[in-house]
Length: 339
Image (cartoon, rainbow, N blue to C red):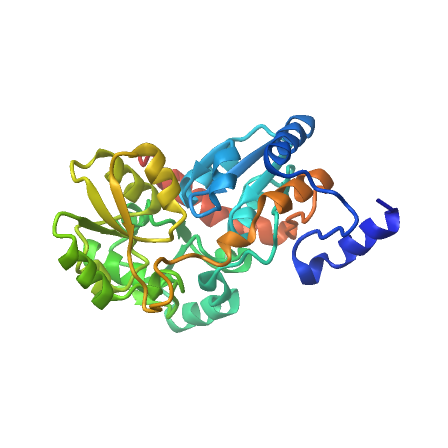
């Protein structure tokens, strides 16, 4: 491969989001897995992956987890390079926690509807309108938004954190209104909600899920709290990604209708191979499951290239990083009791 070809691929990164090198032969199958593992050893890298990633990426990861678990692993790793297989805000959080480590993301176009729909400028405007309020922001947001927050939450620790906030202060919750409504119901806290939502979890159809339940009376519906209230009202259990996984593994029920991103089914089947798992149906009748387009932008080929050439790299202005670090550290401190 020529230097000119590599330079061209690098110059196209801001638009394409990933390295595309036309005359490079990328290993396939087991050889690709072997090549990634060799790069990991050579570069003292760690591969972190979210449960919503493609199955083959989940299988090669050093650590698989939800947002809270991945934030902890990113903070504690002694690797020189973090290859983060998730979406952009997750890799950004890893860099915020690890300024001296190289953080790479297979595809920077792996975004998030929640992060895209909430800005630091918007939060500043809300704070001006409610100057006495504390801002609790869901981790699904960019660094600028985190920097304007008082504390960050994940779906695993949100209830604990909201309960811990001073009762004499109003709370602004951003950017997921569905998670915010669920937390208000659970904690009794009347919060000021940002008008945002996850396109994946809002795709679930209450009518089609009700029909699934009628056709499977021996099944339990389990749902992520990013889903709309109508779906949550039907659920037998509501929980974070890791909580849903643990529930399927430990509950006596043998059949589950799962209302969250379909990538979690891979790990569920590994932990509970004898149980039947049915993806909850979405409004689009041409599709039988809810898949996050952004999460699935990452591929094994892109992971190989980003580890080989250490690009795309996540970089954050130091002043912004320090501002965004404070609410993340506040979250991790309050979350110590959560497994």
